Image (cartoon, rainbow, N blue to C red):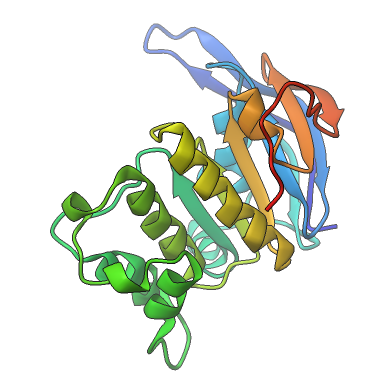
Amino acid sequence: MMIELKGVGRTYRRPSGEAVRALDDVSLEIERGEFLALVGSSGSGKSTLMNVLGLLDAPDNGSYFLDGQDVAHFALDEQARLRNQKIGFVFQAFHLLPRMSALDNVELPLLYSPRDSVDGLGRKALEAVGLADRAKHHPSELSGGQQQRVAIARALVSDPDLLLADEPTGNLDGQAAQEIMAIFHSLNREGRTIVLVTHDSNIAAHCGRVARIESGRVVSDGRPDRKNTDREDS
């Protein structure tokens, strides 16, 4: 088992002091090599759950086992080390630095790499997403789909076991979204575990498993319903 959440809860407080229960007794298991969609409406808790999985936020209670270790309450420096070595992030807004080339953006995580040599890893990651010929281009010279490919390459450059993607197709048109999902499928076939947050049932239908979040709870978990979707396996 790669990931196991047991009774995870997370409460925030509004400026008024009102408590908001973002996650409520969430238990979830994710096998190595799975492609899981977390689906829910805005405010359902899916992004909070993603942040907990990515060690960007800590639960108030419960346990989070990653590769057999309860990592939820590790020291911040240890969590940062695990993020850099084991987890890659892809976000809706790309988060590319505009004054840096595609290659330089991809290589940013390598600044914190413990590897003896990182030569060539950035170009290899760009090749994996079909953008080797755009290495010197800046984000303003790339389409939205190409920018997201750069962001995926950046997530891959440290060779993580786990990819976390938060609404990765949310800013893309239909064609670009399909191309991005094809890349995720290819990465999953190579053995990477992928957890993808989305509110779009058509995007969720691309995944091997769908967990629906409502009011901070997992209310359903199983194979996606592919009826009435345009999914094409690639």
